[in-house]
Length: 181
Length: 217
Image 1 (tube, rainbow over the protein chains, first blue to last red):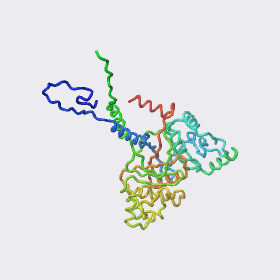
Image 2: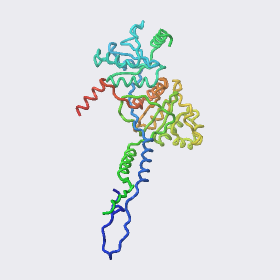
Image 3: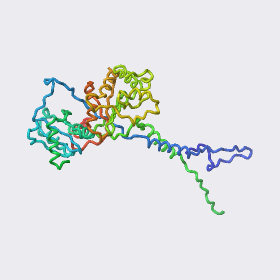
Image 4: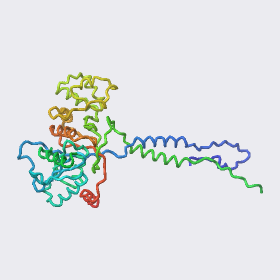
């Protein structure tokens, strides 16, 4: 209680007839405006606050080099290449792309986790390399999601590379086969 | 015995407890609140499982808008002046010292270098960053981000630099590629992408590893 002395409800004890009654003022304070103010400020801070602080994802790029002896060699058997295309569709192939495109497959984006996990189980850890190739039509979110999949699947070696001409042709041909989308 | 007196109850409500709760909540929100950083355009960041908080000091932030425009910003005002000064000296932008100093009030740089002079010469009220064309990056022969990052390198030489990229979900890859090409060219191999957090999917290797680590602790 914000009431220290005897308030109006308390009623003082009787004093003798000669004793002058000193008027007791109530020390009770009306807190209502204070509460009003407090809740006004609370509302303000609730509306201005950003509860989810932005997080940051680290990305380390490899250095571009012209000398072939400095390049990291990837074993053909351990490589998985993901091509990110528009409308969240993914083309992928294992190892080296066959000339006739027979190992070139397509999948929706949500399936790539299974594709990566499947590849990971079949390949020794030290051989596994995932190559992410974003095409000009994919979005920033696709790239970030693909990099995020690497974290989720705990892939140690992955790289971001540009799409080659032969792959572009295969994607174009595959789009044509799917009704010219 | 007379009639029983009807006790006149006071309508006074004790506000103390209410007040306590109110201020407790107030204290909580004041302490946890972080004001949204100035944003030139609304950006919806993609989400990732990363739980590391983005650093907000010594920042060089490259923002990619939903329409592919590129903005660059620095948290510290003296850095803005130093970077513009470096650009001016290296590329001969013919900025006057007053125009270089005016850079300290610019929150977002988003004009091609050849219009820098007219932009900095304007009054603060007349600079609307949302209407600017953005830094050109898509043409690899004329990627002005290269010049910016080179100046950033010169200014932050040997000092802490948090290079960050904040891109909109829907922006196409070539804009992002233009930015990372500029980073690569200037040996800035390490940078951070600003994302919003999403939960780690169950049963994935990452969630298994996270669980193992939490048991160890």
